[in-house]
Length: 102
Image (cartoon, rainbow, N blue to C red; front, top):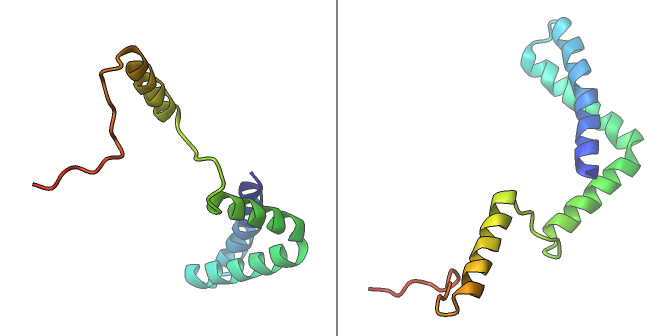
């Protein structure tokens, strides 16, 4: 959530700056470059707390300790699979096993 919040702050800085530079007829490429640089500088100088929170959330997500994000369909599929195995002890689910080479 912190990453999304910080990204929205930077986007809220970028869009008006881009529009201003585009209206000044600097060209779309230069308008994007100027708006990006100024939005970066403003967010770097004034939004340290949000930037640090976003960095911490990304570090946690990619550290390997974070819980995997699963969709509702994946959760339902896992529950159905678990129920099938529980109801039929003779059925073995071996998704992790590699296929034998021919």
